[in-house]
Structure formats: structure tokens, C-alpha cells
Length: 294
Image (cartoon, rainbow, N blue to C red; front, side, top):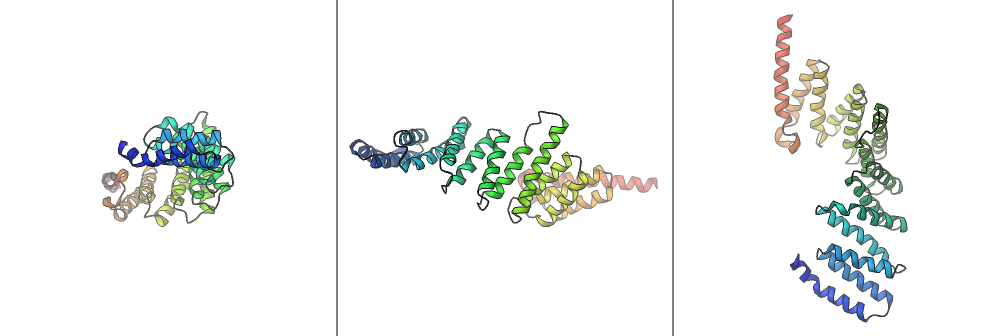
């Protein structure tokens, strides 16, 4: 940290000299912004924020104030990335202020995105969903739009159920609205398989298992290379096992083993092949017992 500060100290000192000598407010604000950026690049995020705030407080009408406001949010984001989650409310406020004051600015979409993530990381699911939804509605052609719809649904899905079964059911229904909107508007988005998978689990939580099955089958057929292809194939095996449809359960577990080698699975799914083999062993015993009984 000290090495990085030394590297940018000359720029920081030069900017300070200009601040001390300049009489033109534009020049002072410019010098403060250079100084704030130098502190930011040196990893001195708290002093950088203080410097950016000087611009906003003393020269709010100058164009540099807009840049400073955005950089405050970015600096808080950097602080939060190092594990300091206490700054998330300040990060949210900085980006909210930005897109509220400058809604037509090119960076407003980024401000929405980071504000939404701040709420998400704080577990403020309703607020996160609203901001992600606003992003998708206001910037439908943005690269964040499809993810915004997915995260809006995901945040609702994550809501802690504070009411009865009716409230819980409505939560899953509300989440599916966002997933369906994403699938319809952005069929080529990389988040389509995420939306399909979560929608299937919403249906399962609503005891609409029969509607979930074709979605899992669609994921296996169309998104086998993604994260959810293997999980969906394995889940189909579990579904038929639960129905005591042992023939279809066997077929789906075997398809899982044949199509998704363990070395191609992500880390959290590496245990699934072993489980599939164990369950196939149980199924073969059930089949043998059925034959014997017949």
C-alpha cells in the first residue's frame, strides 16, 4: 500500500500545489479530481472519497462534480470488495444519488447496477429487485438488462418468508414473472438457463412438479454445456425416484453418468456421479426384488 502511494505521490502533490495556487474554480475542481483519482489508484479509497466530496460540496455546478459523485460509488465498491460490507449503504446512496441527479448520463446504467448489487449483498431483497427491475426497464438494450431481470426474480426468490403459505406461494409466482420476461425478451441471453432452472424450482415449491419436468428436460436438451444441464438431468432422476417410477429414474441417472463425466462438472457438483451410482445400485436391487416377487 505504501509503495502504491509513493508511486502516485508526485501526482497528488502536484495537484495540491495547483489547488493552493489556482483562483479559477474550474481549475481547482479539476485539480481535486486528479488528486482524488491518484489517491484512488494508490488504493487510498477513504481519502479519495473525502477529496471527491470536496468537489461536490464546494463546486456542485461544475461538471467535475458529476464525475466525482460516480467515483465515490466506485471507491465504496472497492472498499466493499475487500470485505468491508459496512460501506454498502454508503455505496448504495452514492450510486442512487448519481442516477437520480443524472438519469440521462451514459453511466447511469452502471449506477443502477451497482446500487442494485449493494442492496442484494445487504440482503435487502425487495429493494434489490426493484432497482434491478428499473435497470431492465430503463435500459432494455444494455448488457445488464437480461441479468437485471434474472436478479430481480432471484432477489424475490431469496426473500425470507415472513407470512403464511399464501405469502410464500406468491413469492415464487412473482419470481417466475421476471424469469418468464427474461426468457421472452432475451432468448439468447447467457442467463436463460439460470432463469429456466429457477423457474422449475419455483414450480416445485408450488407443488406443480409436472410443470417443472419439461423445463428440466429443456435445460438438458438446450443448455447441456451450462451449469444447470447436469443438475437438471440428475434432478429428473430424483423426481422419478420419488414417484417410484424406477424405470425412468434408472434411465435418467444413467443418462446423467453417460452425458456428464465427473471431470467436466463444476466443483459443487462433483459428488453427483457417486450419488447416481449409489442410487442406481438401489434401483437394481429394487428391480431384482420386483422380479423375484413376480
